[in-house]
Image (cartoon, rainbow, N blue to C red; front, side):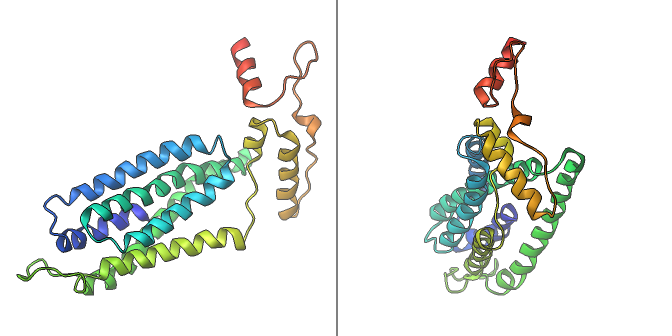
Length: 239
């Protein structure tokens, strides 16, 4: 949703700040998306999927709301880059969380997530229609475009940032996201991974027979190898 938000506010922002190079706002957004994808993509392997899953949406909502108060073009460019750091991380992290909680037989459902992109862009466009359509300076007016005449893009950012903030809060209030069992196993926390599997099964009205013994891996000498990242890498190099 947020990439199209930047495109929607670009004409109004360039009019108000009399910017001769409006594409710089899109450049700022793309820099933020790249930085976010790199940071959160690697970061979620360090501090966990659950924290990254929640923080990416929080970062997006906070800087989206703050961006509505931008006094100049440089400020809105900085805030666009910052909220895009959250957006750029939200894409890979959400997909990773979705896949790692699905059985292999149902991982094709990942493609269904793309449908929500279309709905989100439709929602953003419908919200922008009255706000930007009736509260934006005309490109043909001869007088300077003032903040009061051009407040539509700010209301739009407040609306979408508020919506993202509500979704961020709902992630804590409505449902509980457990840490990814795959991440826990990669950190050598087999007991916690098994506990998460049993909790997820219970929430879905199922039972699981998985135990810690099922996760133990032995070498040819029956020595425990472990399931953490370092042990897995060592086994791979020894092959």
